[in-house]
Image 1: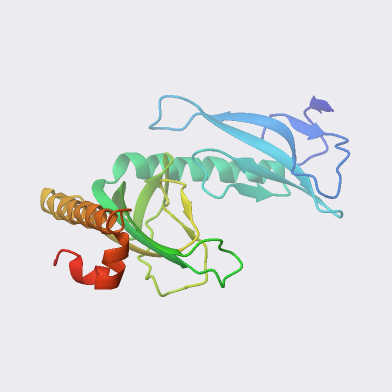
Image 2: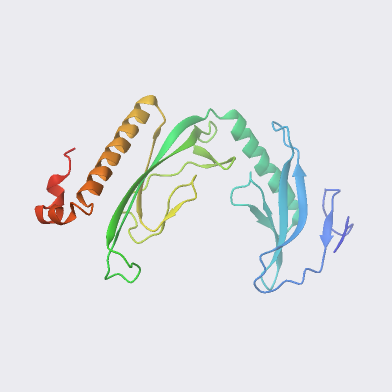
Amino acid sequence: MTRGYNSNFPNGWETEFVKVQLNFTGNSSGKKVFDWNFAVAGKRDRIPVEVKAFHDGTEVWFGASSQYLPGGVKGTDINKLKQEVLVRLTEQVTLLTNIEWEDWYEVIVTGDNSDFADSRHSALGADLKIQVNRLKRGIDPATGRELTIINGAVTDFPSPSGIDDNPDAMASGSLTSGIRYRSQAERSYIPATPENRRAIDSILARMEELRNSIAGLLSQENIEESLVQDVLKSLPKP
């Protein structure tokens, strides 16, 4: 790998240009060629960006990735790529600092039924989980887009989804948690007000009560009688 300004490359940047034999393989995940650091107005520290070269068998392109570049940026012209990265980073910092961000809740209800007849399962059962995550919500004053912050970067605010929207899909527990469930999921979004927090706490307390009741009814000393008497009749009413 040799580095240096290539005078035959028509660019306006007096910066490095890589002319390199990368020895790509058919399944290469990319070769790192640059570590850029951008100074962006409104942010004290420089923003690091990693640049890799990729090859699909016919052409080479570059991909730039950073905490502040959701989805990354790619292109075949390294100098156009650098310009686009600077534009994207500037947009990110502007949105982060100029938008009025509010605290919201992401409420996720997941559940799954398993059956011996299904080859995926070795157990008979059902589960229910409610998960509440905190996230930010803001409105871009220029476009009206609903936005949120994920891992320090601004991106589109998630849309609600119904538990019956795609029953065969693998649901990823949350944008923020990274947890994955092999189940259906209902996702809703509400402001993180004290009233909403109290209501959610009440629901979670009710779930704990229900869980303890079921555990008692299906304990070793009670399970036979509970099944004979129909366990559902013994559960506390809402």
